[in-house]
Image 1 (cartoon, each protein chain N blue to C red):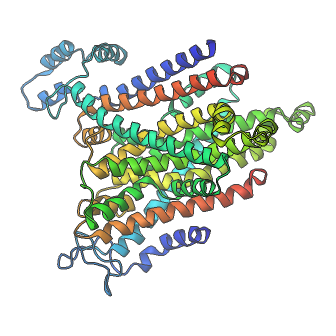
Image 2 (cartoon, rainbow over the protein chains, first blue to last red; image 1 turned 135 degrees about the horizontal axis):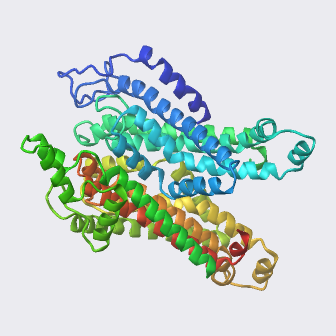
Image 3 (cartoon, rainbow over the protein chains, first blue to last red; image 1 turned 180 degrees about the horizontal axis):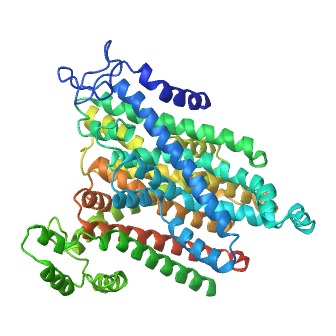
Length: 259
Length: 301
């Protein structure tokens, strides 16, 4: 699975060169064809090559999930660090908002964000980021509190280090570990959430080849072309498992104590 | 008691804040009913303003929120723009389907996870393997993917279940996934309890596995179990959404999604508020149960 975690981004990057057909090209004389010599993974209900769409969708799915995770890390981490340094009133108010959002499941928050912003790739990334950011904010705050109480930070403060120096030199390197660990856990969840939101028709544009959208299109015609449904769904499951394996590996690297 | 009240007060604040946020997003949209009428070309500026005043649309957002909230509490959730029906009964009907799905799959998940963990505490090697297996299953395979595979296998290829409207497949899929989410942490807790000296002493005296579960494992593992169950139930709503869509169940997920696609704001608003409040309620109940079951939590904050 960890091997797959390296292969999938490679496939996504090389996808446009590897794909045997244009992912948007419709061949109306070859609808719903089962896998064969010309179309290795068959064609869908509009005669589009499933393998080419799968490769094109890999880029979209992985990029959206990775960007969503990165943005959640950035937004949540910054919010947690900044809010926890602002003094009690501001921290309380900021974390009241964070806590309010944290109680809701990411899929619901994503649904709300996309319903408010309308479908599209940028709103999708933002929706993922907003859904997962509250967790990052919490982890950042907890990690900061723990480090601030540590002896070496107290020693630095006593020997005259200013608040910015303490934050950048001492706190940030130690807060980064838990945040990266959380990002590693978040990535596979983002892959699934992206697929589900695209499946629901709230993600990318209707003809954009994302895995969730491919599955949604094929689900309505499962009897005529079961392969067109099975292929993207298997890809989603494999990508999730690969991202989870990668996350585990990263977590062991970053946080050897909990391995 | 004091702590329970504090939890309830915080949850009430969360619920209000979420409701207000959702109202700002979906209830107070700039394109209102007057715009629609005006676009037909029959109203001049002053008539529009008069009509807005009559409908209360010129009021600030918080006033309209209060008016909407008061009506909602009295059971009036507005009228669906798309179907012209009152939203309340639509929501009620959809909530019934979703609640049924949630209750059945939640119960299945809890029973399965607890059963396996207790069997493991009693020393069953098979149960331990089963815990590992369903844990891996729920991590690696999203319910969405299993749902599609089940739809293909049973409905399309084997022709067993009705593809649309059947509760059995979604309940099984969600139930096993739920069990997988909580079984692993629960089994770790149970293993820790079983390894304690007094429990080992009780076993050495010949306590039956059932007695062990009843007198030692359940009381000690209960707080963890309650908190895990709370997490599971709160996450269940996301799972039911995909299942409803895949298997064509007319629940809350389907209602909200159709509302979003049909730009039916009153339905979207009511559905999302109901879902969010349900989750806040579940979180609050689980936190209260936890603080009651585990008095140590009370002193910690």
